[in-house]
Amino acid sequence: MKLLYTFLLFFIVVFSVAGQKPSKKELLAVEHEISRSQYESALVLLAPLMEKYAKNPRLYLKKGYCLFNINSRSSEAIPYLEFAKAHLSVDSWNNKDAIEASFYLGRALHLNYRFEEAIIVFNDLKTRLSTKDVELLQKINWEIGYNQNALLLKNNPVDFKITNLGPNVNGPYDEHSPVVSADEYLLMYTSNRLELGENLKSDGTSNETIYQSLWREGKWLPAESGGVNLKTDENNATCSMSADGQSLIVYRHDGISGDLYHSSYETGGWGKPQKLPRPINSIHQETHGALSENGQLIIFTSDRPGGYGGVDLYMSRKLPNGEWGKVINLGPVVNSSKDEESPFLFVDNKTLYFASEGHNSMGGYDIFKTMLNDSNQWTKPVNVGYPINTPGDDVFYIPTADGQRVYFASERAGGYGKSDLYLMEFPSEDDNRLAVIAGFIFDNKNSYSYESQIIVERVKTNELVGSYRVHPTTGRYMMILAAGETYCMRIVTAGYEECEKMFVVPGKSDFNTIRNPFYLEPIVLKKVQD
Image 1 (cartoon, helix red, strand yellow):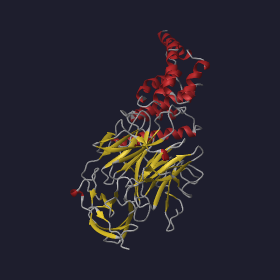
Image 2: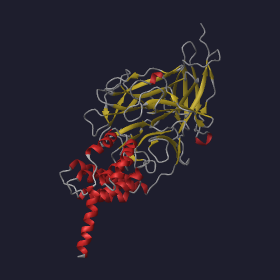
Image 3: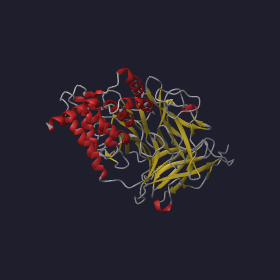
Image 4: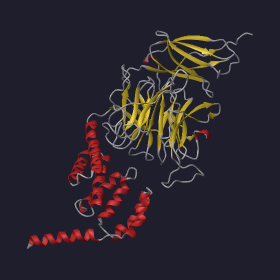
């Protein structure tokens, strides 16, 4: 009798919890806001419904889902999703809501570093699904893999110091795609912050726009627009910048497709971006691109047919006639069945950093490193580690010339917005093999020689290292060279005598590359005699 009473009491409680259901009409406004990704607004509409229909598991699910999708509130979602999971049976007719409750609970646990618990939730959900649910089972297996990878990476953390770039750079919206000059005095990046006079999109943000900030007196100055030529009515985003801060690859969407453009710095600001030609751009989406330091190689992302996943990494080399050669997919060693993004080619022209949702990611996009070996093949990508990578998206990773610091974008607790820009600093024990070299060239009137072309060769091998220009605003040239070697610098200027200068780049102990390049003595040109 007592057992029967207990069963009836349990049945009444469960029935009362599940039986108090809001009507479709009452949920219409909530679902509309969720469909527009207006989760804060949806929470406001949910509040009176949750008071009216106390303990209704479907409302708990919706609140948990909203909290999960709001930056830094995924931990608040966990108790609501746990309640929904406990009171919605996957085996019942209402299994769609039950599946969502378990799936998003697992993801919320994952984002909050509760990896073991997340694996348990996902494995339990797998046992309750039909083998016909192929796509869903595949997603769950990916989530389990993310958590397993996270456990392994967390056991071998990377040593570094991380600093948010601060409110002069970051805001309440998304900041991403940082690019920085070699001397770390110019930072450019992308944000969807709202500017005065702009119209909001449906998600409450504006189109992505390019911003820039200068390093002065130990801090980044308040960010300003990158200029009228880097702004259109559609999305514009930074991709890569040359070491001297005079050349920029940008992404631009014209409302139909996304393409890559090139802009050069001119007197007074950035010039009008020119669309990169075929075969780099296509009728498909090209979302990010990185030039090698010598400008002879570009690595970019595209969702064109024939790849190994949604978005793949491709490369093209410049031909002797100045045109771009055949586009080559980087292959299945680098490209996974999921998306790859944001390539960055290090100054050695053989080390590639990129973001991927595949390989052994610990969740979302992780940063990976691969190298071009002596056989001209890309090595197996290596996850750069935890806590550089997190359970969230970690996408844009820009190391400095000495490899001691990294500018990157990440979704982390304590930021100013969903995605912020950070500086990562590693211990300075590694031997520095690259140096930032700078100097000034003057004409016979003691003015900066902006028209000079600087050609640098490595003396030991007679190898051409690169060609450089004088910055049209600062009057300074800048280049990145291997330390401990001898170079010959040849300066060619119309109307002036050609001159040469031999110099040795010192080792790490002789200078500091943190916003302090090694300066060569100024060069004064001689006018050609008539």
